Length: 388
Image (cartoon, rainbow, N blue to C red; front, top):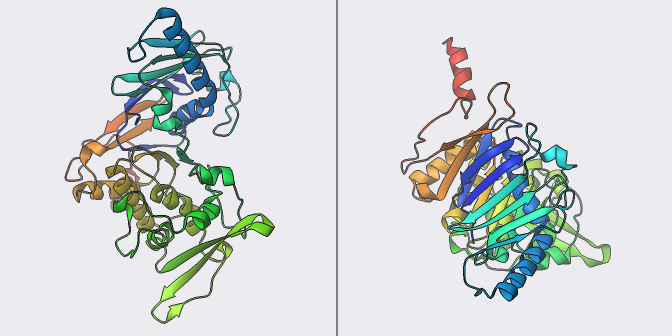
């Protein structure tokens, strides 16, 4: 099930937020305004997944056994006998006081995710004990956040290197690592695998194979580029190589250190989207990093196509080029207006609490409102240049 709504209370600067999520959700705003906190709240659930599932299953079965309730009836399951994992694979958040909204003392942190009228609510108290409440028919394992191939790509992605790590466990789970560190390994193992979403096939591709389409979408960033990857079992690593295709043939192969930094930095994002299937959840931080404006727009177009095919993507971005490309995709009909949601995170002067403006795109690509600070720096500087 896709997550279509998220409520968060008392988590960092998120005192009380309630956001509806479409297939493509853009989180925008100035630095330290709460965007990353929203993502961290979801990742905290993912990080505690095993405990949550075990608790939920135990309490559900106990309630069914002791109260003679049919398995398809809708009722609440509550459990509170395990502890919150604060520092692990997805997030490292320190102590409970570091994530509790500063101006509350006796209140719990609450994170609630919805799919239609089904929900899962998690409360964390100061003892780091987890309290779970859910409708039994929702089933935790059915939320896309908790599926094994949920993909998160953090802002600190892989940089150009001579070799990259291997992970059979991640590759078998259809994952490329949080930093995209197993992208080379994944491409080597799955280069001939067909894309699961036909519309993600590049317009110039002769096949639906992953490697060819990765090269062609990467070619939208750096024209005529071609990519290859190889696993070296004897050295326990994988390598990436790039070449360029011209009318008189190909150039020599170059290792990632000898091409532009942004090429390797964006590669995990392209692969994460191309390997996706409908109902998957992908969270991407700052896809625009180290890309020129046209490249940022192409990544946004790729996200729009995937979202229109049922992939749920949450993007944290500071890029007006990314936003404008989504507007153009909507005007072209690649993405329906209801398939995207945009939120502008801000903090008013002298306030701790994050405030959020919802912004909508209509079928013509127009935006319904521009709150102060929402991608308006271009106009501000232009006014200064014109002396206005």
